[in-house]
Image (cartoon, rainbow over all chains, first blue to last red; front, side, top):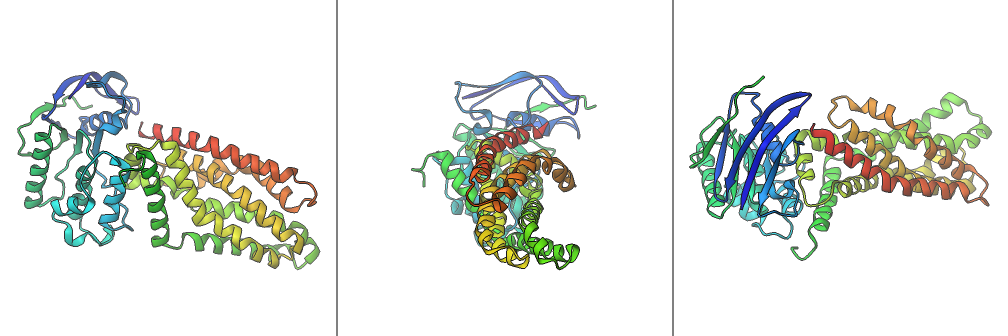
Length: 201
Length: 225
């Protein structure tokens, strides 16, 4: 499995955020996108997720797949996408049904345990701390199997132990032949290539 | 669970989630009915205690109050999902966005539109609505309020990223609701031997059922730009 991006340009609000960006990513590889604020890291991830149309260029998978981009990828953005009225388990059960039904992934309970959240599974998300919410949001990576993970600042609000867990989870995903593109300012402890987005306007 | 075809179980999960959120946050359904009640109660104060006049305009008042009460919570239909990031997730789910819009509208109507339909006969009594029209008012609201929710969903999708989108939503949507209002009131107050206004009302709802999810889905897809 291979992801290739060629000549990609993304425009937001009439301004070119970045242009002529090309890279390829093989199965089991990860890419860390760096660059200063406003360089277009989040825009790149949203474009890869199919949430932002690209002005030019192409994003393709080999072998070619019938599934649209956004069904191949997990996207963890700045917002945690959790409903505060629902419990952590209910939120994850919804993620599992919406994102991965019929294609594997572990149960919400196992995913919560993997991130050390077993004790708060039955609490409404409104009562969780920022780091706990982040972990619930990251646990969705496990309830549905999708080959490409797009992580926007995944370790925000995580403590050292949770960062270590996250590193293990990402390593396991890579070992299974998955791919990761992460935008971050922190180091991720992964053998990752670095893509530096330059020239911010 | 994995036996069900994927998109369907995603939609079922969404439907359950919407009802759970609506029930837990609370206030949504009952607040709409209370707003409906207040509008209906205010009218006799404004018009005066003329029972003949009130009885004549009762279907119109119930319909206008129903229309405004339906609009009440619509601005949050997609906005709440947009703000917490779950709209991205819905766009990336395995179900098409048009069906997601439809499921959200259905859940929203069950929580806000249906209580209005159930309350309308009682509120009709407060307006001296003749007994033989009570059923036709309720029936016309039952057939017409889904169209209002669906048309409102288009406005909700267009104003999804605006902080104060509620007013703009009303301005965008109310003109589009005029046909529903005309045939809704006609079906509620017309002579009972003519079914034409009611059938046209049903046609409008069916039209909205097909058209609104496509329009709202297109608006939500373009939202990221």
